[in-house]
Image 1 (tube, rainbow, N blue to C red):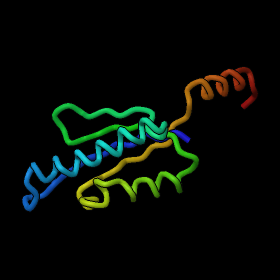
Image 2: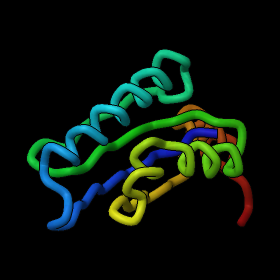
Image 3: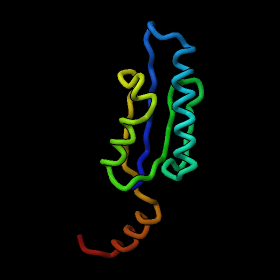
Image 4: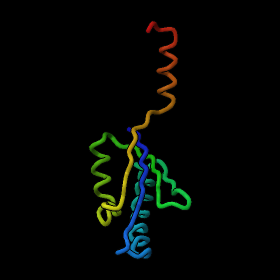
Length: 106
């Protein structure tokens, strides 16, 4: 199953920017490793914001939930990270479905 993940990372006044960057460096290493392994299809950093967008492919929602719990950034500062998850459908499958429905009675 494909999922779009939108990460928003915040930090409070008790953490200096260097602390955030240290955690983010560890997270980036893990994310790029997951990309090399094929779980992460692609990643983007939103310019000028502490946001990352990822497309991932996993077997089911349970696997995704476990992966999210195990991310370095979630373990170290999860209370400052919001993740919006959306399930994706391949467009080719959608197009085939639409084509099969043309002319069918409602």
